[in-house]
Image (cartoon, rainbow, N blue to C red; front, side, top):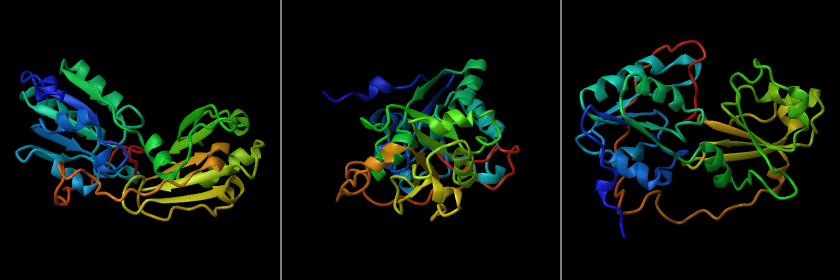
Length: 291
């Protein structure tokens, strides 16, 4: 029996905030719960890297506010996002914070949830498909594979070289390494792994614009990545995978269907407005999904 909208109706006062994962890119990877929550929103704070067709899912009378970030600290500062969440919730509104990927995986959803909890604002966390799974599935890369990898390690590329990384352990692991926001440091990371004994033939994959139009997947090796031969081919967000499981890659058949069901989207929506470029705190910018 279909779920009634009553099952996800949000309380009116003192306002309610839903931190919703939008998925890795394509609107048809938004969960059903995420869609129903979104369609009841009065205020939507959304990431700038969402596909333009997400606008068709927004209620026509909802106030849509772009709050995305970019590399180099440009975009909407996180403190201002917190301010907007609290301001609209305190006015008794249903607020949806629509975040690329999953809110709790490099999405700063934990920070936003802590701020809401400290302010006494009711909220919920609606999970989304992370780019971790989305990019892997869209490019046919198994994250784990019998005989190749039984573990996945999730790393953050911006600060990987600056942190107390155990490079010898990382170089000998058989886990699949997934490096978010790692395109800028890919060469140095590959060099560091080679220096500590990783195999030069270790497969490396760079997936860009995962699940969106123009997605690219480039397969290479640790040796070539360390030499600077594995570089981004697009301006979109990228995710790096390393590990033996990449050698088990398959090639999914592209579906011959629109991105979203005719019942949800009929025509491409208008472009989503973008926030004015602002300087955020040092190191606060990022290109992904991920908000």
